[in-house]
Image 1 (cartoon, rainbow, N blue to C red):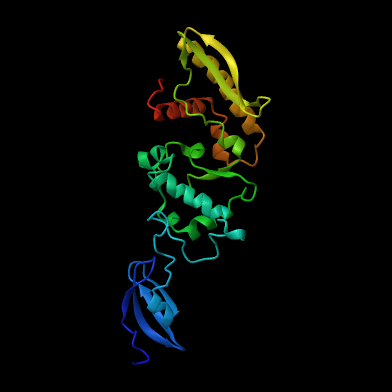
Image 2 (image 1 turned 90 degrees about the horizontal axis):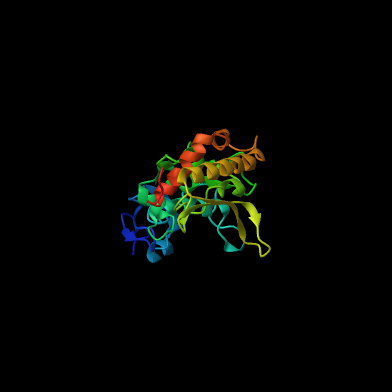
Length: 264
């Protein structure tokens, strides 16, 4: 058999689609290209035979994201995923994985991801260069602009967990009605003796608008109190939003409307 017999050979890799052998580079090494992505690499004859050739540009993550070529790795010590990879995959899941619990609020509402962020290397470079990277802060889009329909470098920032959790809880109704009256309560960080989150109670009201006024009075005060502890570290856009009474109200109504049960 000829030494260069694999030139122009077309085959299928195990997990990254079709490849073509372009040329022989010497010392049992061939240049290979993946037509789908244009990625080229050099492999040994045994890799061609077994199909064990990797294409880092192939959309192997949820069918849309690629690992890419660069310095950022997916796995860290003990084969656990790196923080950057977990955060990136979480964004893709929210927008593309219909099995994700958060998909209905993101992908299900046509929220997408910036084109270049489908490459993990591009996202990781942005993420690791954020001012508060390394503090354990969380990626967030909505606190910058909850109306934004795309995760990108302009709509996203990092926020501490205490900030990111200010508006969790579902908001199926802002002031639920119980036994003919409207209940006002909210979480303000307190905990019960068993460690569970405590709901601060602010009374029952027969008039819904009065109940809403009481709710927003306490909610806005709490949001401002928590955000003040991070002044100077928070993204200025987030800090401004969290100190804007109308923005806080509008965002809470928005969250309530997502559940199709909120009323303005």
